[in-house]
Image (cartoon, rainbow, N blue to C red; front, side, top):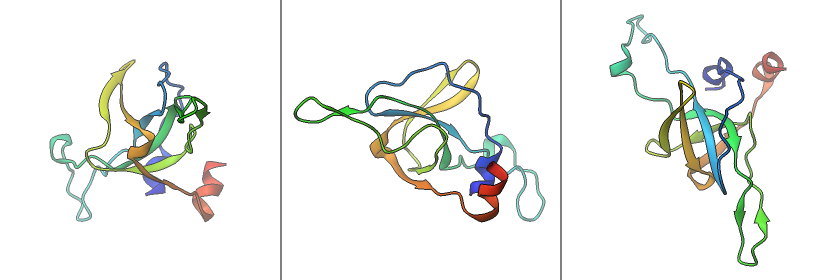
Amino acid sequence: MVALCAGLRKNPVKFLPLHDRVVIRRAEGDLKSKGGIIIPDTAKEKPQEGEVAAVGPGSRDESGKVVPLDVKAGDLILFGKWSGTEVTIDGEDLLIMKESDILGIVEKTGTAAKKAA
């Protein structure tokens, strides 16, 4: 899963999400099946993991205080199959979703962390 996210672009997004919204770059799906068959774009299942590209300032609690988000730009995350809204910004396909739609953060371990550094 981390390997899928390793090739994501690190270009900054020219979009600032509001409140508790997060902009996600979806991970690239497999181009070939395990048997070596090339999978066309129309038959690929979209990955449910990606990289956080930008985050909003946070949501407000009952007293009006801004509560910062738990995720930050660069985090590798998992999200639900139907989560988020697909948008195209500067020719790049992205997802915008609320932080509550994110299932968790994938921690970099071992060799994946060394390659990223």
